[in-house]
Length: 456
Ligand code: ARG
Image (cartoon, rainbow, N blue to C red; front, top):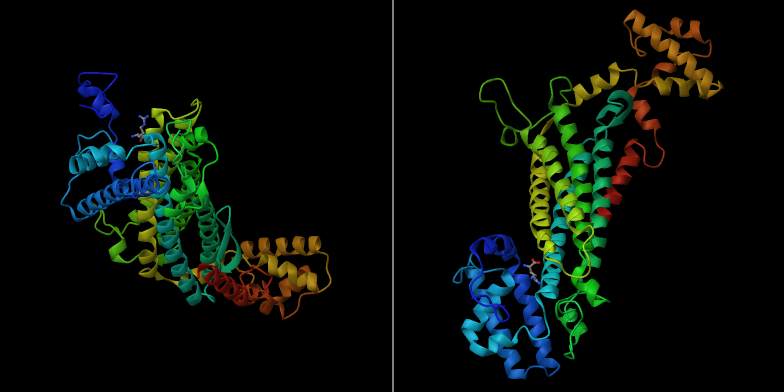
């Protein structure tokens, strides 16, 4: 018999139960559900809606259920409708009629909104820790590669010299913004909707602020209709997770490229590579590909949530039960991806000579050659044109700017001198890029230090 049997009698159809039931996925919020109920029950005692002995017994009973679920002596009933009903049922089995008083002044609508908020706030904290680990790993790696010159790309064409450290620290910037977004979302998540009731508040003199305080939340929701029907905090997180995955998938894509024979900049350790069932020579970056691939799945959850909420009239609608599977899947996926990346980076081998060779082969110092002429007094556009002709000449003669003889330089522009070779040396090209945020060693060192400071 359903706990809500009353108006309706008889048993509901099995097919309804199957569709209706959310215990299969909301049971992971059991701790949040019970802690929310403990705060609610304690408050009911404090304001005199329940006698203090009653309130204390309920809190104790809930504490017992929590312990039993944690140590495995109590199993979740897969036939229960949802985690809220399950906990209340067990409480009533254990305390008798007193258990039935827990739900005074509360609805599952405000209860589930609270549970999801508490659960996501905890998950957000976990995410911040994982992002931090990845950032620290990238900072450490960058520290080792401040002088590892590699080509920077635009349009995936060699463009200008950077260093591996500079490239990796770009990802740290993205991840720091992800962190910021998630912690801001967390602040908005940490408010209590309890007291909103089903939609129109309650006639009991509840102390909503006391509940929020007991749960360590920042405050309470301001409107009961909004309190039960708002899922912005879920959407904000799924949006933040989507952006984060977009960053991880770009990182994954670079790992995949760099591991190819065409680039040869790095190799993943055997423990983070897979083989092929037919080609014996293969060592595949499957993990990076999966990170790239799973990004689609996280975007999918975000679109599910947006679409699920679209056009819902106020206030609670059962459609909103769908929020959990979507955000839980996104969270599980992102956490898995975040945790595999640090050991994957740490155990990889890098090939600085290959990076340098790629940097030397692509005329990526052409801008520096033009800048050299600017320093010798030429307007940039003229310098640009002359350098373009030099590059064409090198291609024709199968040479590079480094190997082109000085006479050829001078023939195109008499302002060229022996010191041009120093100016176009890759190391010089990088170290002259000392603008704030640039790839010069001291600048990247600053980036690392600033990032580490933020991560403290
Ligand atoms: N399992 C439901 C959910 O996840 C709990 C709220 C049910 N409320 C209701 N009015 N049927 O949204």
